[in-house]
Length: 240
Image 1 (cartoon, rainbow, N blue to C red):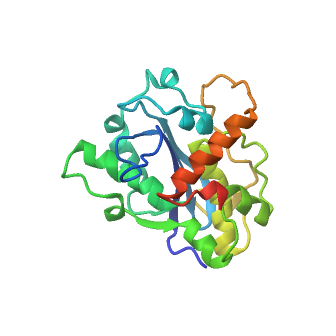
Image 2: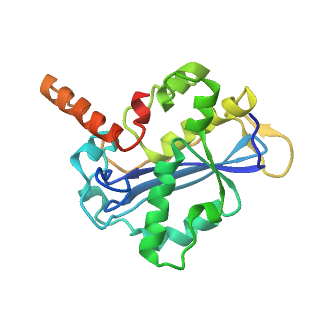
């Protein structure tokens, strides 16, 4: 598999939760978007990262996944305020996400809430799903992001909670491995073929460090029951 565009945006979202009785995005909203830019198979260091105040409270199950709270988002912009900046960042690029229909469904839902005249995301970008790519490369195997990191030898030990920018950075490494067989954290200089050895800059979230409270046995059982319920509507990518 080869990358098909010189400019690629790898992105991820975190949300208020997931609807279980209709479209997965309906009645929910995006609370974080993270995206990184790749040009000519090099990470440029150019990123897009924003927290978003939704029009509803976050489900407790979602907070357990990403750690973002209603209180933290109280002074953040609503999606409509950052829409054009996000569109300008992705416009014309190949857009890459893991289980892309989940993220693009939420993006199109945010677009829809702004008005019928707003185009869908696939009208703006070519969308590539790394989960579908992984299923073709490794049929019958688990293909969540943590498994792919292990399979390709990518260090994700710093990933304790889901975060849109961090997950996008990790997925960028995975994508480069899946499409070319090698990857590097070297950043493009932007004006020639030279590169500078440097680590991707991790953006501080501004959140306080969260206290880790381990789940009790009955909570783990309830969690598995919840995943079984989600699995009736969509792929549970962290348990494939």
